[in-house]
Image 1 (cartoon, rainbow, N blue to C red):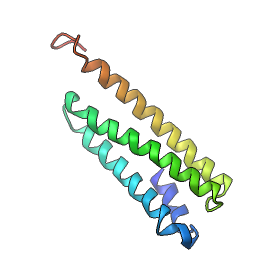
Image 2 (image 1 turned 90 degrees about the vertical axis):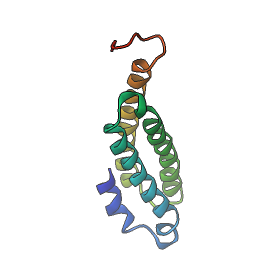
Image 3 (image 1 turned 120 degrees about the vertical axis):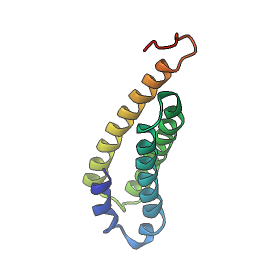
Length: 112
């Protein structure tokens, strides 16, 4: 998704490129960072980073919608980004649910 976004970011109108566009760019890199960190942690340590990535993804959806509603992002570009973002959200949500099950207090040690 970041590669697609980067192409669009370069052609955003100046009024949004250095404000909302920069914020979206930062959110995307922060999501990538949170996921990259979570991948290498123990299962019980992953949950806060996956949760952070989910919150940032939800914020990103809102910011992209604002760009679209202000006509700074056309329908085709908005749809392309939204589809990727929905897919990312589903993956993060599934991962979050799996971690909740694995780390639930009712689990016995060693049980998956």
